[in-house]
Structure formats: C-alpha cells, structure tokens
Length: 395
Image (cartoon, rainbow, N blue to C red; front, side):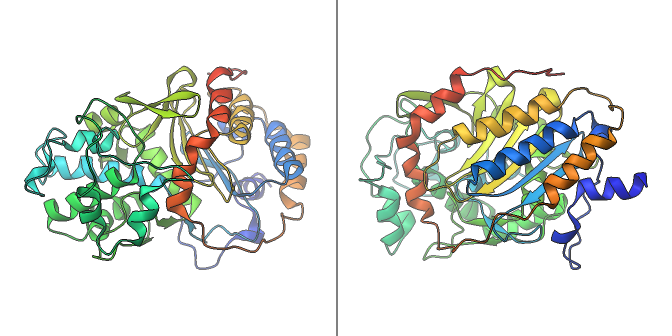
C-alpha cells in the first residue's frame, strides 16, 4: 500500500507515457517533510484561478513530490522555455570557461568579433553591455532582430548607449551574442556542446533549440524542454553544480552566477540580477524566468526546487500568481525530516489531482521576443512580491 501511495503522489498515472525514460526518484510529500493538505489546497487554488498555467513540478530533498499538468499538456511534452533559456546559456558559459575555451568572464568580445567595443563576457551575462537595446511592447529591438537576415550583425551594428559595465538594460541581444561567442569559442555547434557537456550528464534528452538565420542557437530563448528536465537545472544549481557525484558546473561559477552583479530596471522597481538569474536574497530564492510564465525556482534553505510552465499574456519575473504558488509551497514545507503520514490529507490530494484537468486551449506560437520585452510593463506585480514576506516555517 505504501509503495502504491508513493507512486501515486509522485506521478499522476493518467499522464504518464510508456515511452518515458525519466528516472526522478519519487516520494510522498510527508516523507520529505511537506504537508499534503496544503498541497491539495494549492491545487484547488490553481483550479479556482483557472489560470494559464500548464504544469507544476516540485522537488524536495531530491525527490519528486508533486507533479501536475493542465490544458492538455503531459509529462513528456516539451514546452517552450522562453528566457529560461538564458540560464542554460549561463551554465554553458561557465563550462566553456572551465574547459579553457574562454579565458574568463573578463574576456573581451573583440576576441571573437574584432573591432567591437570593449564589452566583456561578464557584461553580456549581467545585461550591462551598454548596447542600445530598447525592449518594450512599443519599441522592441528584439522584434527587429527577429526580422533581420543576420542577427549577430544586427546586434553588433546597434549604437552604444552607455559605457560597458555602467548601466543595466534587459537585452535579448546580449544573450544571443553570448551564444554566438560560445559557437566561435568552442568551434562546436552550441546545441551539440550543450548536449555533450550539460544535457547528457544531467540525463536530459537532446532538446529542440531554435536557431537564427546563420544556424546559431538562439541565446535568449527558444529551448523546448519538459518540466521534469527543467528542474534538473534547478537541482544542479541547488547543489552548487554537482550532479550524482560529478561536478558539471564549477562551484565558483554557480556562486558567481547567483550573486548580484546589477539591478535590472523594470516599471517602478529594480530587480537584483546575477548571470542570467533573477535573485531574491530576502526570500532565499533564485529564479530562472521566461516570458509568459516559464520558471525554475530554487529555495536553497528549504532544499526545494519548483518548475512551472504557462502561457500568460502578461507576466513579470515574479507575478502575483507565482508569488501565491511559491508562498503555498514554502508554507507546506513543515520540516527538514519526514512528517507522520496523513491518510486523510493524502486522500484529499488524490482527489485534487484526479479532478478533471483544465481543458485544452487553442495554442498559437508565443511571440517570445516580444514577451521578454513586455516584462517592463508588469513592474507593479514584481513590487508586490518584493515587498511581501513569505510566512511559514522556513526550516
């Protein structure tokens, strides 16, 4: 009976694919110190909101304790990650530095693109290149790049708006330029390099990753991945770059990536930013965020990782909806060790998960370049998160 309950709560059987080779260890919430009753209330909240969330996966102590899908999505169906892609590019940059393809994050991009300004790799990672890059709903250089025949040339031809390293500005151009540098520095297709040095070691099947007209994988967006694979990156960074006893990304690079290098200006606020990671130190959280609601959240103090995919028409690095989801998950984490099994609560969670899923919606291609720029319109939602405190026993 206990084994059957464990299997149920780790994975909704109706959503499993016979072809899946995923091997996430599975557990009941209580075995990992999480209250099933609060998780069932979370799922009820999601249903009552009838929001555009497509998936939610929660990992505690390295164990999968909650997984649910909506709108026709399933466990094995890849989802576009939008700007979460940037956090994967950050990891690949650290690996390329470790492997000696790039000397350091202080290397100048003129090493690969002669005649360019004194922009360093670190400036691209922290969105402080100084390249003029408006990225709003009305004026969007990303949209213009998307229509150009050569994306890298388009980026390098943009005027300089500031001295590199002095001003932050959210830029898809910075991220895509870094992908082009990885291509030139390693002498290898970026997807192939990523597969060999990151995806395969983590057990992630080679994903779809869209390319620019010259065949360079898009550094700012357009990786497609399942939520179960998304949380692998979160777990990797939670454990400071280690995976199953092997150091995939150096400890030094993970720490540098998750420390504040700048603040990104959004409407009515400034968000702390590392190397393509959003930082919330007061909450003990780091987040890889992508437009339309793609998220990987790391709660280091709780040994907890959350992944969400969605299709919100309006979204910010942390929205009021994601704030509430995170708050409820954090409050559910009652203990570092196991809790007594609660059959009544587990039954409630079973009912919540077995409820008819939100109906499939008509999906159109998400304009990921525009979505990333639209974040500046949602600053008030971010400030709500910034000023709220997460209640509960954060052990």
